[in-house]
Image (cartoon, rainbow, N blue to C red; front, side, top):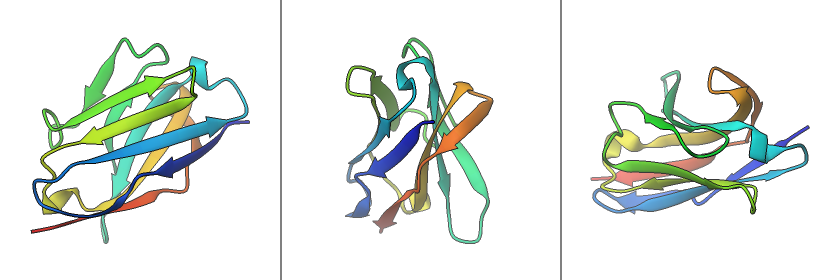
Length: 118
């Protein structure tokens, strides 16, 4: 069983940056793919970015491509989401998830709030 805890959220101004962390405990985090998702108020959860277990491959939604960077440090059992040039539309609760593949996330964190004001 893998437990995930997100941190690093907060309230910022448009154009600012934030770095979210997803710390894992238990299980074999280093063999799992990691995904970042967000959920805005009144909207469904949407994928933001993903990274394979080795970190060799990443993917991004069109809305964040070029502004967000996903990475991981398996030695620290932590994944990161660097968010630059934030815009109000990035506001929401951000979740990290882990699973054997990027299409099968079994483990989820509790979420961290990101609020971007104009």
